[in-house]
Image 1: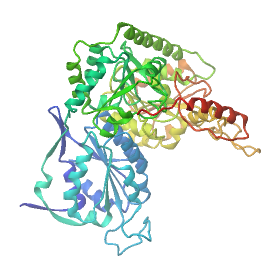
Image 2: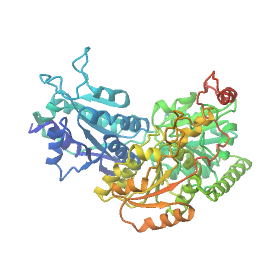
Image 3: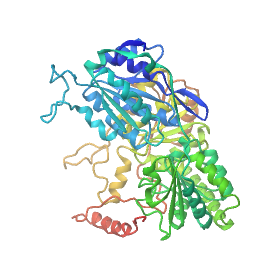
Image 4: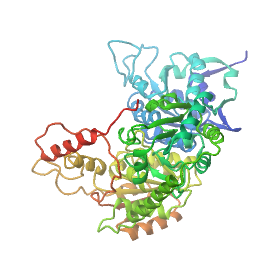
Length: 620
């Protein structure tokens, strides 16, 4: 057998650049390159290898290790999990900075390969710089922290271990059911060790992404359940997008007349103005979606993991006879809520269900009610878009301006704060990939880094990054990366002087927004002074962005028109009134309230909490 003598790091990069995926006859490289920040733990190994293969495997320079993982996950999401990046860091804080990104990727079921440097495997140098010493084991480092947030984890203590570890890593990364963050911990000395690798190890390998079908007997039972249901309701999750099932879903809904509610990840499964699209469902849902959810006798979940926001902390489905059918590639999600589990690909399963349900459709009265809810909600969105609130503009009006002045194929992106809930309710999705929310982990700081990944995956689209001031301050550094790479983002920075979302939640639980406002500390000892004079326009400009400040609706509209002709990243800063909020509609979220307190507002909130708590239920 022919051999190729390479360092472990060189073998790793050479292997990665020859991995491909294929689905429905379309083939593409799985890795679009590698993000990295170098330190002593990876510069001589992975750094040298990336330099050696720079012409065939592109290296991208990030400013923050967490950010580069978010960029990779956002890219993978936009690519429907068929392509991603590797991310490399040094040992120590560089590695642990990636843990939040790893958690977000795994929670959201998105493939990302993490390659943190590690301590010396040979150990003679120990304790080395940035080494975590343990009295219980010589084989532990900070990289063990990645274990619970990775779907696959390994430490490569000998160069030949790559031969068995990398195929396992690829199996997990390309699995629709098991994918998430994969971590290969790379001791810094072993990265530079050479080994005679079999040349066949580096041959092109194509990983086929299957469209699995559910069990036939369970499929037949599901068909029976649907046929006898009077008020079925579809909950469309992210799996609809990942399996490219939006057209199949529309055909199924047109055939059966079953209305649809959308999760954060599933939003855009149907156009906002499709008559049987009820829009957002759950805690951040619409009136119609939550009203029908309360009454439905059969929930058909498609590619959803049923987060507590989707099911309103188990209060959304109140019909005592409600049943669930779950279509999902992952067993853990298919079996939730004691459901009839159809473990399989969403597109393939919808096609088979549709064929078997020929002649079935819901009643005309039920469909008319869903159509009425759709029309009523559109009128409510229009009202919020045009509040003419003042003197400071409302967040709903900001969303309305961006939605109205963007193109149907453009992408809106957000992750944390009050904005995701408002976007879920208010954004009029016109394109299946036009709505990108990281709301499985709701990671502050994801937005700009995630926008970078989306734009790299879809350079033909404009990407509108909606970000609050608090989230911006956590990670604005990737503006520099966008400028370096010549990538245009349109950042809409909403300045509401602090943590507006949690401020509202704090008020709801009786604590009056404690600790959530950006204000000076006063002689009282509290943070209740004047608003901090943070100049976001100067900050963004210093990082290289073109900056526009908008003081009102007209100025915001003018700015959104101007940005279309600007070639580099733009940051529009708009101050909003944090007190003017979008309401909740027919829903509740379980956030525990102190059982005893000297504060009468907390006592009141506790009484209301105990009443709502009674609506929570198990599905058995």
